[in-house]
Length: 366
Image: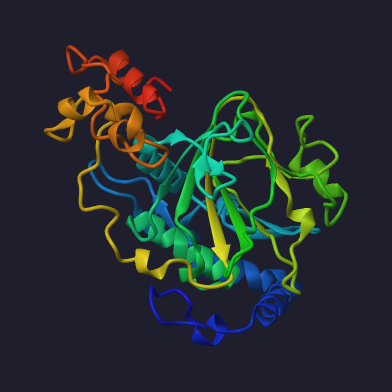
């Protein structure tokens, strides 16, 4: 069944009741795992792997059969509580580096969903992050199609890709991914983009989880204190972790509670794909992100002619989201509100980095 075009495919799966959909997916996963060699061959045949780009170009794509045999992709089940699978070598180094390069200029302090449904910063989540729009880049599009093949879920069920960066001491406290709405998140895929040399930073499942076999704990460890005695996965560049937030019955799987353990050493980069039980904002897929040019957090300037007058009338405090900015956008009048520094010369990296940090963006020097 071809589920991988943008519009109108997999209609037979698309309108199944939630319980039937989950049971069908579980059966498909069971049958695939009953024949590991067949699954391995199918994933190898379908995966496209970007290689290092030529000077000035973008990553080229070749068959995975041309890769070092030790780096060929394969899937390993690690738990039924929650249902979790590790896809070894899901991304190539070139793909990982490309995704980080796309995201890095727009990385901001991560937020969580607040009591009023809006996004707020919170000590439970101390990383930097941003979202990359679906189908916005050729490499992203290939990864999204690959995810649809692996999960057997229509590509339109995926959210935009969230990129997160955790430095030393940063973490994400224990939480659930599934949302109680008309189309809850059925599954999460975490892709690890860093160089794999960090200590800590595991994805751990602290409530009711268990390994498929006790020997797997030794294989995937050693773990930091946060992850010890739990089902956990240590970040390795190119690896992907798939786990389900819902049981085949459609009920929430409470063993899917997970935490991003504190980073002890190094930098952790991840890409997250949340997958729903139905299409997720299909109207966003082909729409441009914005008709306005992106504002540069490094440059101290006003984007409206009337900023100076608005600032004098107190709008910087009355209307801070528009004037200075919020968790989603950079303000139009940061200069007039004295929320940035005019860098002289403009190439002053330290000054530009401070402007980024003051606006909540990842500093250049990091």
